[in-house]
Image (cartoon, rainbow, N blue to C red; front, side):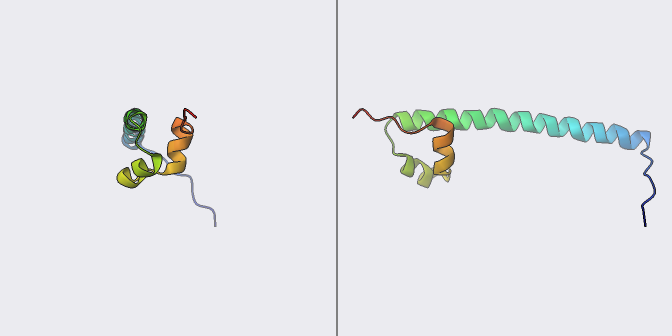
Length: 76
């Protein structure tokens, strides 16, 4: 049996907009903080710490690290 259409009240509509604004704001904060994480990881990596150690000591995924920062460049 089909469900009857839902009638959204003005109050519910107002609260839905509030929730969506909050979600959008949280996503922006997450993206900004993630950028800060990877900038800090790049700094650490640039000091010569091996990717394996960075990942073991931080819990980051090695594949993600290499995807975000690229393969490690060697001077050979």
